[in-house]
Structure formats: C-alpha cells, structure tokens
Image 1 (tube, one colour):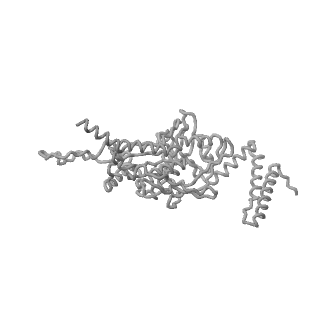
Image 2 (image 1 turned 135 degrees about the vertical axis):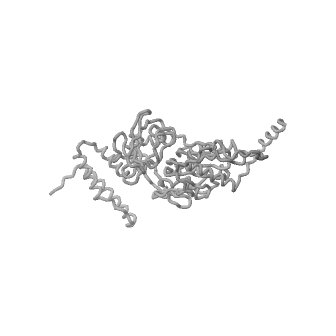
Image 3 (image 1 turned 180 degrees about the horizontal axis):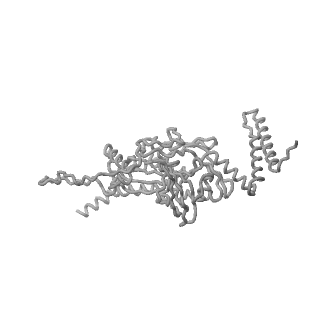
Length: 448
C-alpha cells in the first residue's frame, strides 16, 4: 500500500534529506570525525503532528501561527528563562532596561505551569498591595495561569494606566488562595536610593540593575561622602530581581580595589567570559554590609557573591533566589528575537549560583520585633540629690534609626553590626584637601 504524503511532509522530508547530506559530506571531509546526526524520525513525527493539527483541529489555524507555537514550545521546554519574543515582548524587554514601563510592577518566572513572583518592584502597585517574593499567581481576572506561556501571562498583566486587574494569589503558609485587586500604573523604577541611618552610617538601596545603575550608585555614594565622613554602608539588594550584567560588574567594582567580579561558562565560543572590577574602592574600605533575601536574583547575586568571595562585605539576610544563568537576546528580525540561556554564572571563587543562590554569612530572617518600654524604671538620674555629669556627652541614639528594629529587623541588625565593626576598627576622619583647609583657617580667624 502506497502512502501519500502532504506537501508539508514532502517539504520536511526534502529539508531533512538536504541537511543529512550536508552532515554526511562534512563528516567525510573531516575524516570521519564524530558527528551528531539529525533525528530524522523525530522530524517526521513533528511533520505528522503538525499536519494532524493543521487538518483536524476544531478551528482553522494558519501554518505561520502553528510554527510560532512550535517555536515557543521548543524554547519553553528548555528552562524558565528561554523564550520566544514577539513584537510586544521584545519591546518590553528593551524598555525594562531603561527603567519605565506600564503594569503591576512584578518580576515573575514560570514554575511548574504557574507564575511565581521573584520580587515586587519598589513603589509599584504590587508592593503597595503586599504581594511578596515566593507568591504564586494562580489566576488573572478569573483566567487560570495554567497553560499560559510566560509571555502571555506578562502581556495580560500589562494594560492601560488606571485599569484594574484581579490577581489570585497562593502563598506558602496560607491554607486558601486569596484575591488582590491591583490598579495598573506607570512603573518608574528608580534603581538607586540613599539616606543616612545615623551619623556616619549610610544606607543604599538598589531595586533593579539598569543600564545606568553603576553611574547612579557612584553618584549616590559621592553625595553621601560630600555630606559627612562615612563610617559604614548597608547595600540593600533584597527583592532585587537583577537586570543588566554590566551594571552588576560596575556596582561591585565600586567597592573593590581590583579582581574578578564574575565569570561565565557555556558552549558557545564567546560564552566563556571574565568580568573584572575597575581599579579603586570609592569608599576607601569602609565597612560594608550586603542585605539579600529570596527575592535577590541574577545580577544582585553576582554583586553579593563577588563581595563575599573577596571578603569585602558581610552578607546578611536569607539565601538568595539562585538564578545563575545568562540569557542572550538574539534578534531574528526587527520585531522578533529569541532570548536563549547560553551560559552559567560563577562567583570569583568558582561557586555556581544556579539553583543554589548565595548563602549569607549571617542568617537573619525577616521578623516582627516588639520592644519593651522601660522608661518607667528608676535610674541614678532620678534619685534626689544625684551628682551631675560634668562631661558633655552626645546622645547615643538618633532619631534617624529610632524604631528601625520594629520596621525592618534585618536592616537594624545590619546597622548594629556596622557599629560593632566601627568600634573594633574605627575609621579616622579623612583630611580635607589643602584648599579647603585654607578656607577653614581663614573662617576661624574671621570668627575669632
């Protein structure tokens, strides 16, 4: 009995035969070198399945759409981060590195068919609604996530500013899912913020690694240094989903005199790369604490891992997310691209970040801490006829950090450790430049 092939099957058969002939010729030219043959049977199976869908699916679907579905399925089967980017998704990827887009403000990934929150973005509707790292998104406006691709889910979360969406959340530790109504907004990711916790002790928050984050961090530190001497710094990378690789290298390099920040390994010739810090520690060795948690991923893990390996910082908090793979965006047209995992990250000491993450030097779980009011207890000052203190002592605590232990116990512990490091190894105030010293002397003469 003769089997009749469809034109599509004949096309695949011809294409496969041509490829196999090319492989055979190459193998012969290379003196029978070890070559991997194309899976002819599997390609025929693909053509058969393609034709069955094309001819028998309940609704007619054009060949171009089916082939795009095939491409998406092929990439989604590799890992959670390899995706086929159509026009909107490609534009969103390009926009996200500049720091402004419209949506809910969530960094998400696909896990076991569900959408998992890697981290909410600071100042976004998602953060304001209390969505947390590790939450699982089950439904979007009563539409189940199960069966959606990552791109489809992200596209559904995007929308006009001011429009509402109901997000069904499953949270570890909660018995039942719950709904949260979010209002979409323009997400402007200010990737760097700084402030003083107490005199001499500074706080610097990086929410995402964008193209200019390295320059922004440098500007923030220079602003702090211009205001007062720096005794110690807390670098907060909690719930930082990552971003641009080059920015993470720039940021780590600001706190290192020299050395490797990260290296990558992969199958492509250009996948093996070493990324080194530029010379010069902008803080001149000031004590440094890096805060991380389960929402710290990718580029933030690179920074934490590099500073940890070089013993430049104490890493505190909880174990990070463990996203240690490199995605390369490969444009295939003006409006489409493939984002493909091409390598793995390794810290300077050779630790793989993938599926392991960065383990803190000191584990500090996020907790609610309640302090006791002991202001009613009697002290020497309260006794009648007590002797006065003849020395002029400054207040130990400041308003800047008052109540920090109850608001953010992890940051409070980081500040306490910074103070301890400063007590053990006090930093001498940096002398003023000669021209400023002259101005100071003149001012003192005028005042006298």
